[in-house]
Amino acid sequence: MPDDRGLTILIIPENGEASRTFRLSGRGVRRLLRGGVVVGVLLLVLGGSWVYFAWEARKTAALRAEVSALEVDRERLGELASTLVEVERAYAQVLALFTEGAGAPLAGASAPRAGAPGDRSGVGDGSLPDTWPLADRGFVTQGLSAGLEGPIHPGVDVAVPEGTYVRAAASGRVVEASDDPIYGLFLILEHGDGYRTLYAHAAELLARVGDQVESGEIIALSGSTGRSSAPHLHFEVLRDGQPVDPLEYVTQP
Image (cartoon, rainbow, N blue to C red; front, top):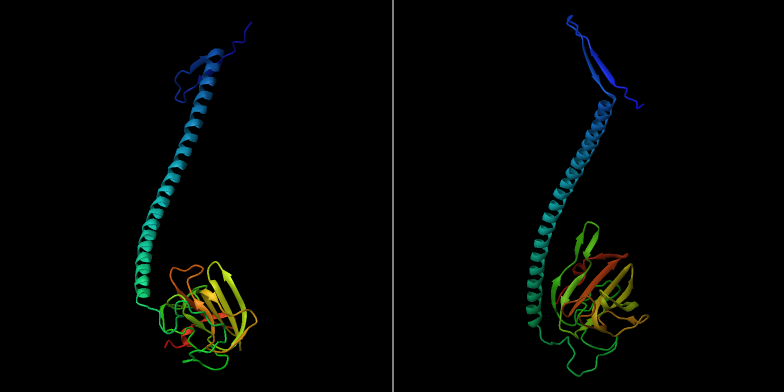
């Protein structure tokens, strides 16, 4: 015979009233248990769904905040790009003011090698880099600027026509003459007493590693190689390996 054991619930009131008895058949108990399981599962599913959607809503809010921040950054980049375009335009206008002067080689003329005689006005003596590094006055477009972790721009940029003579700022020895993705064609001179000078973005190098040069000697022709938007000389003075302000050593004619 099938098991039809049921469940009897006896309720006895404390006030002396008659007791009450409720009886559930075995089938009813099983239905009640199944219903409880179903309700429990539904509650778990609903609770899990609520947690999931709450988490997704929080992620969506965070993503919206990130998108808003990116929009602000994009607007700032657009403004910066516009500013850079204006700077480039102004830079081009400044360069247009220059014509080939006394410091630039004439068309078709051969460039002298390092050590060739020439105009040595404003030339200093000794190892201190105090000679203006160009045979032309040029136009200083950017100076040395420093950040919290070191120089942002470790030298000066001087706009001059391409092919202007680049001169040694002091007597010394060429310790590096090479090409670089950023500096382009560049030279480094060792002057002693912890001083070095760097000349970058040249169109042509006229001195080689190991050459001894005197202050004011022509060592290169200015250009726009490497990361450069127009012809200019990038000039650095290093003291004990650290960039210092070149304009504290050299004076623009």
